[in-house]
Image (cartoon, rainbow, N blue to C red; front, side, top):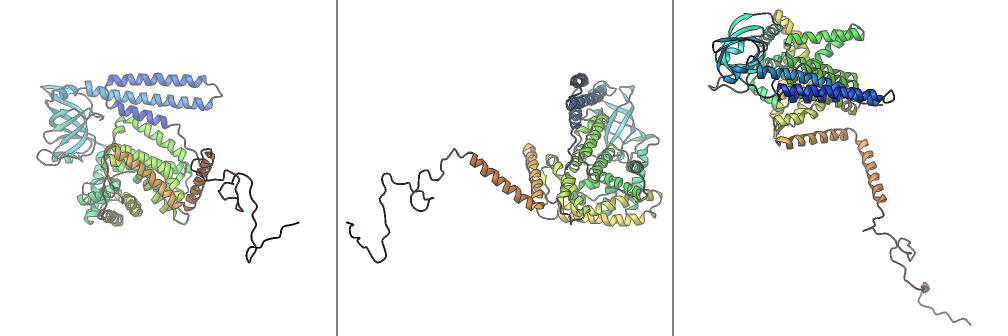
Length: 565
């Protein structure tokens, strides 16, 4: 018997996500009012649940779930209100309003990333997350603490997490929905004033050593291998990046839930080899995943990928869709509580949808595949298909084009992804010690990365690899319908006998429906009077009046019978 889905925590996710989305666009006062309203609603649900008595177990469960959703939603609203208050009346608010130049002292808290748009002179711009220490505006020094985003020229490419820097620039307001307090457009290169210990700085150094250890490979694997293992795409060729975007394989060039699932699964298998009991194996695998996160850098995207990867692995290997959905809802609510700004983050949305597709569909689709297909191949087909079905509408909303080869390209490249991730992860700490120690795993992982790059370039070069798609709501609805049709087509292709049974059952239902409506006889041809002739189904009516007898003449002509006396 198929296990039913546990939907009790779905309202919790819906409420927390809605509040987090709204909190990025409303003021601190409205956030406070929303929090109070949710607390009152939660208390009301608790009172209603207690009045049901011991007999209404289901009703009390529903009211308790709604109360929990309101409480967590209120906590998210409070978090959003604090962030909005920092934007409206924090230490940066006057400088943002005046748009005056400032001399600012910052603590770098993230890794530099290339800005999507270049500067006015055409040079590359860089973005990095930082925390305010103090700033000078109009000859007055203001101290405070706030998260900001810095954009600057090429001098910001080399800053590292944990460094204290001083620079000049102009403070600007951030776009609605962002959790940062301000945007600093730096007009000068940073001047490093101090460098403290930060685990992200160590992670950045480890990533740089791994990139150096792989630079002897050809250009495609040399750029792709660091991206697939640590998310460093600084040396990825632009043509290969375009090919992977065309074939829907860009998720391989970042630390995603798939990477974390492979790492976590590898540690679980290693624990099973040593015959560890299940609790000990779980602790060992969790410690291994935490080590991987610290190695590649504990950025919010990496932490999110680790959580979603763990949920996805539990869904694929455990086969308990109800429990996996509960874990997904709980993890999503906690992440939104810690950082409400994730609600409007496209990467977070895609990550949750991909994991939801794996939880709901992957095991079911894999069970549709015939038994003679190896289990690893069935999972390799089911996982990308289930993720693609749910992520497709969001992807076409961002980039209105259809990539018909995305599924087959991911399936073909799938067998090479696991060796790249596992061997590359083994090579990262070895490369930190010596590039010679990492030569062997880098060589094997590089060969597999070259195969992935070859698959991307092959399918990107095929005709029709990127087809135009409708924009806006029409395109989103069309992709939703396309996903449903695709799921139905997959089921029909793998269940021909079931298709015949359902078609015959549908035919019987239609016939029965028509028979039940037989009182409407318009256009029906059927005997309505007593028929004549030997064929009782003959449709000519009987002539009125007495019927004359008719004899069949004998052979040889007419013969008159003498009258009887």
